[in-house]
Length: 280
Image 1: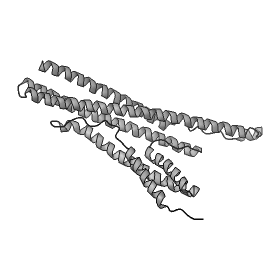
Image 2 (image 1 turned 30 degrees about the horizontal axis):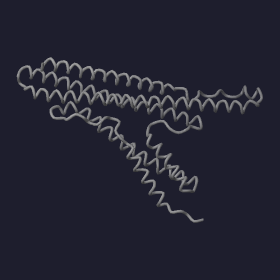
Image 3 (image 1 turned 120 degrees about the vertical axis):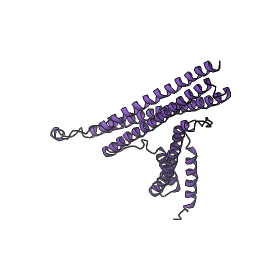
Image 4 (image 1 turned 180 degrees about the vertical axis):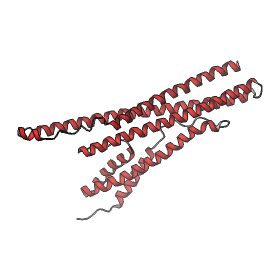
């Protein structure tokens, strides 16, 4: 039997990896602040963007690695290029998900591992929201100090109207960008939460179907045999203590994120009113 060369497959895999890398984009809105006067206030937001770029690069690497691994598995199991490409697609999807929950568990041991992955994902997302919240608070406090200083200097005649307006516009833009980042993060986490809940429900339904199938299969067993049977362990779909703890952390992080965004928006409105009163 004539073997097909591997080169076309590798070429297609490389092209697929480029497509995967092109899919990685920032969840944050584009930078809108021209930083001239207050780089120290914008730095926490810039650090968030830098951290996200590092995470995106790691995700792309995981997708490419997953595609190659999936191709090897698919190719070995089918002996065909088609199998390698299907494996590459599946592996690429798994790698791109990264720390998110994926795959179907076939045994209780794998279900337990699935729950650990779920708890880990919740923890990572909660930590990400906490980082965004902390950065926003640091930035907001810095802008607040600088706004008060600029307003006092304008009242004292140390800043011209134009100089004050320029500083205010940078402060306002920085806060608006901070609010947009918090809003984008909240939307992303809301979608992730929906995915988590839907996946958990799916896993619980699969577990219940498996339990019913086992019960139906063993229904012909004798009464003594059933009496000696060990009780089944808890269903993997049930939230373990660690999962429940991570779920509470996730919810608390969401509340802090939303509360901080409201504070930023109120601060913007307060500044607008103050500037209107100052400039007349």
